[in-house]
Structure formats: structure tokens, C-alpha cells
Image 1: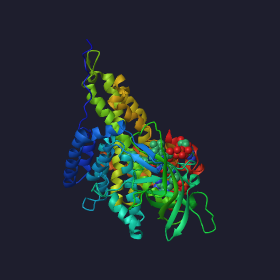
Image 2: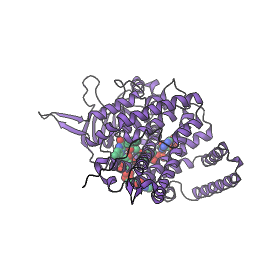
Image 3: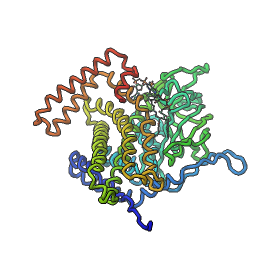
Image 4: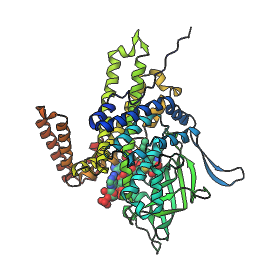
Length: 510
Ligand code: MFK
Ligand code: FAD
């Protein structure tokens, strides 16, 4: 009596188990590139199953702690991190999870697709190490785009370490934007002041309200330079971009930074997110005065793509486990997988997840082309447009989708030891950080205000249809007409209502 044991769902190699990722790569990539990428992703998929997933689970079970004082009352702000967190960061470097995106020896057109595909597989097993990786990638991109390596030896060294595959040398970065008065409206909400020392060196004083992965080596942050008369410029135009190393290289002491407390969060418990007091933190100004937001936007557009693979990666993981479980769980006399209603539920999740995967891959393809210097203007405009749409759409969809996925396990989906509740808790952050859904809707409008963007989008859609041999399809010209009609309606709306009016953007959110 009571001896029945339900077999748990099995985690399969997430690359070979994915129904579309491999097919898209095969179709897009030249044969020699595809062969290498597929080999790497297959091998990495096996490593996820056999090693990484268990490490990620340990991070959830042993969240970070902050010890602010030692036994003698000295302020030490020591972060206590589980060894598995550190191990996962080392694996990330070894596997080139950032390095691949910048590797001069790899095909420049396809290395971004390779990198983001790898991170997509890694994400749901990664114990949220993907958060510092996102910001690390964003920091490397910022250094590259602003050509900071040419003006600052510190930034040059940082770029080398952020993209390094040597775990003993690799760095991670933070991204400190949010303050108590404003995470969305950082232009008004930033109270951190920058006191000039000499050259481009400053001391920062302020309070950063949400700072994730504070075990980072460096960060980019925003602050308001104070002029010689003690004045600052309010608003976005008063913000500059600063590079900060977190610790003194010789003493390893924090650089004018106090970790005030770790946040007690709904999810992302694996991740040390801190409130930080900046009390004379040494910093280097790396943008022109007033160009802080535009400078850090380089980081935002990369971290938003990372955010999307995290959303879609969790969607894929819950479906993959639910599909496997459906072949093991017997309900009303037969396996779940034999019940049409259950299959219809999973099919609905599958369609949404495939659509989001394709959008993610398309944004990544455009990013790769742009970075390889091969994207025409239409493609560049589309990348700028698709990035916020992808982030907001995938972030918004993943929460209800994972909730429904968890229901596929019945009561077991609600049980902590299965690891399934972590997926739902962690999903809830993806519509919030890196810009909420409404704020990203406004970013879409910011892009559409620019000339030719909407037209470029139509051209892109038509181009994709043509590439997919849809020219034979009688619906193509009808589709073209419909897209153009929709575009002209949108343009009218934008003309008649201020494009920064939230009521227009609300339409995008809904
Ligand atoms: C695996 C998990 C991955 C995720 C890890 C995440 C870890 C957690 C990290 C965080 O959450 S970090 C904090 C993220 N914070 C945000 O995303 C802030 C959200 N708010 C916005 O995005 C606002 O729209 C923004 C702060 C940008 C508004 O600032 P402003 O100064 O009012 O904007 P304005 O005046 O429209 O633009 C200033 C300049 O920036 C303009 O350039 P120009 O002066 O040259 O014209 C804009 O075009 C440019 N800009 C703004 N957003 C841009 C951009 N440029 C390119 N791309 C963008 N996205
Ligand atoms: P607010 O800006 O106050 O927004 C509140 C609400 O108002 C939102 O629903 C928003 O959509 C809405 N809203 C705002 N403006 C408009 C508008 N114009 N029209 C319509 N609606 C609007 N930040 C960092 O800088 N670095 C980090 O490392 C970091 N890590 C984080 C980790 C976690 C776990 C979390 C939860 C957050 C983290 N953040 C970090 C902060 C995050 O980026 C912000 O919380 C987010 O950008 C929103 O800012 P806010 O919290 O100030 O909300």
C-alpha cells in the first residue's frame, strides 16, 4: 500500500530536443559554420544535462548572503556565494558564452547567433548566472561601440577580460541605473553626483537601489557631474556615463562602495541583488557630458536580447519537461500524452514558444549582420525596432505560459523539490527588469518617430516572405497591401497624437 512512485520528468539535451532551433541554424548558416556550431551546441547540451543543471539547482537552494561586519566590528561587506555559483561563472567563461560573440577567429556574421543559441540552452539551468553574463555582454558592447579601448587603458583591459575564455582572468560587469526615485525615468530619478578629481577621473556619491550580481568586477553607471560652482544639470541632459571597478586591485577592498543590504525578492533568489551606497567611489567618465543615457543604451539593447532568451528559454524548458512527463504519467487509465485535451494544451504553448524563438533568432541574426558590417539600413532599423518588441513580448508571454506549463504537472508542479516553481518565480522578473513593458512600448514609439523605420519594417516582412518562397503564394500581394494599410494607420495615429503619449504605447502593450 502506498508503494507507487511516479517517475520524474527527464531533462533531455536541450539542443537535440528543441523542435526548431537546429532547423533554423541549418537553414541559415553555411554548411561549414553549421557543422561546427551544431557540434558545439550538442556537446554543450549534454553538459547541461550531466553537470550544469545540478549546479544551477544548488544556486537556488543556497542563495547568497551578505556579512557586513567581521567579528571585531570592522565593515567588510563580504558576499557569501555558493561554490556552484562560482563554478557556473567559470563554465560560462570556458564555454565562451560571452567570448563567442566577439571572437575574431569565428565567422562574424554568425557568431552572435551561435552565442545567443548557446545562452538560450544554458539559461534555465544556469542558476541566474545569465544575469551577470547579460550585463557583461552589454559592457563589452558599450566599450566596443563607444571605442573606449582607444581612450582608456582601463576599458581596454576590461574588454579583454569581459570577453576572455580563461576563467582565471574573466570578469563580469554590473549595470547600475536604477535609483530610488526612478528606474524607468532615470533622467529625472538619478541623484548620484560626480565630483571631478582630475582629467576624466571623478568620485561618485549616491545610492543605487537595485544592483544585481554585485560580485561583479566592474560596472557602468550614470551620475550627474557637479561643475566648479557646485551646480548640476537636472534631467537626462545632466547625466554622464561612468566606468567603475568595484575593488582595489591591490587590497581587494571595495572602491568607496558599501553593500547596504541584499534584496529579499519574489524570485531570482540565486542572484545577489544589492542596494549600494556610493561614498566616494572612484570612477572614469567615458561619455561626453549629458550623453550618459545614449551611452548606456548600447548596453540596454544587448541585455534586452539576453532577457528575451531567458524568457523563451524557460518557456522551452517547461514544455520540454511537460512533454516528457506526459509520456510517464498515467491519468484515467492512459498516459497524459494520449489525451487530446492535454495535447491541445501543450500544443498551444508550443506555438507561442516557437514564435518567440523565431523572433529571438531573427533579432540575433540582424545583430550579427550589423556587427559584421553587412546589414543594410533597412536591417539596421529593423534590429533597433525588433529588440524592444522582442523583449516586451517574450517577457509578457512567458509568465502565463510557464504558469500553464506548471499546471501540466498537477500538484507536483507546485512542489518546491521538483525545481518547477523556480521557473515561474524567475519568469516574473523578465517583464520588469531591463525596462518594463510600458516603457519598452514607449521605446518602440521612440524608434517609429525616426524616418523610414516603419517602412523598413514592412520591407523586412515582405523580404522574409519572399525568402521563404512565399512569392508563389497568392496571399503575398494581399499581405503586402494589409501590412502597408496597417502601417499607414499607425503613421496617422503617430501624427495626430504625441508619440510619447502613454495612451498610444498602451496599445502596443495590450
Ligand atoms: C538573462 C537575464 C538578462 C537580464 C539581466 C538583467 C539584470 C538587471 C538589469 C537592469 O534592470 S538594469 C536597468 C535597466 N533599466 C532600464 O532598462 C531603464 C528603462 N528606461 C528606459 O529605457 C527609458 O526609456 C530611458 C532611461 C532610456 C529614458 O531616458 P531619457 O533620457 O528620458 O530618453 P531620451 O531623452 O528619449 O533618449 C536619450 C538618448 O538615448 C536618445 O539619443 P539621442 O540623444 O542621440 O537622440 C535616445 O535615442 C537614446 N536611447 C534611448 N533608449 C535607447 C536609445 N538609443 C538606442 N537604444 C535605446 N534602447
Ligand atoms: P517605475 O519606473 O517606478 O515604474 C513603475 C510602473 O510605472 C511600471 O509598471 C512602469 O511600466 C510604469 N511606467 C513608468 N513610466 C511609464 C510611462 N511613461 N508610461 C506608462 N507607464 C509607465 N536595475 C539596475 O539598474 N541594475 C540592476 O542590476 C537591476 N537589477 C534588478 C534586479 C531585480 C530582481 C529587479 C526586480 C529589478 C532590478 N533592477 C535593476 C531594476 C529594474 O530595472 C527596475 O525595477 C525597472 O526598470 C523599473 O523601474 P522602477 O522599479 O523604478 O519602476
